[in-house]
Image (cartoon, rainbow, N blue to C red; front, side, top):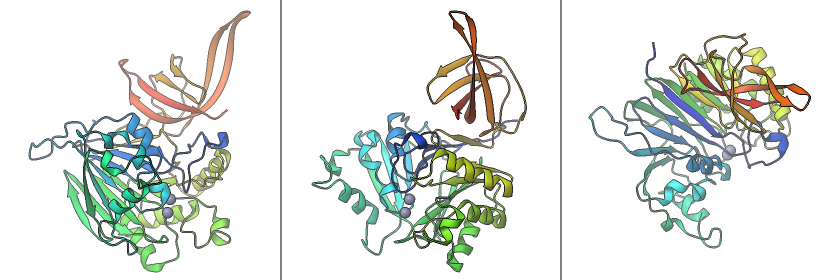
Length: 368
Ligand SMILES: [Zn+2]
Ligand SMILES: [Zn+2]
């Protein structure tokens, strides 16, 4: 029953600037960075925000992705939407760039402010003296820079990538990645209101399994104080998802001033208007094309908590809960006066196959 599976991991979901405020740790404070592994082993990274550093510290070079011709494909393809700080700042801290065994292909557009090799210039500039202790020549990995323009389409392995311009100050690209496991559309940093670009965004998102969209502002902010800042709201995301026939909407690029409780509120409102909505959170993993997350909605079982931290736990379960569903966990701990029950509430951020047969490893983030 299992077909080709595409794995999408969220390493950074915060917009504009990283946050370390404890009121934002649940959704996470790192700026945009996603990792997508296609069924043929092709590895993509979407944007180079501060989440890229964390990805780098858990780096596994692309699996010997055997592409159709039987040639080994050990490269990683990094699609960059635009040059604002929050989308490039992870690069100097991405350890795999300092190893000559790795190879990266970078893609982005030619900025009218920079001309040829815009992305390369941006990376070099952010590491130039006196902004950073070493310059880019310290990065010994193989690097190639590719220029992409709105409307371009190309294939890597079995996957088709389409880029379109979206509405954002100084320009920005949205990407559609069609894989045998499903279609992911990554469109962040976009403000509604330009009829041509609004139309193109709907074309880009048409029928997507996962539509990741900028939801930085509340609909009220977007209509007043934050107009012209280049961002969107959950309500606009719902509108685009509906009109484009996207299956799941992911609210992304959370405002640095939005606390977890505020993001919970935006998610709640969005879910009232659209069937399948997630709020992107750091550590979330979506598997497209797998049966995960389509199973039970209410269940109860006794199990062992494998990995417990202040923020969350990894639990071995026979049941398979839905991604982002709520779990109530009652933990029994031995006390001096006999066992004590500790009640915690959390939600599911990842589901992995467990070493234990017939079980899933379910990652939970505690909410209270
Ligand atoms: Zn941004
Ligand atoms: Zn931006």
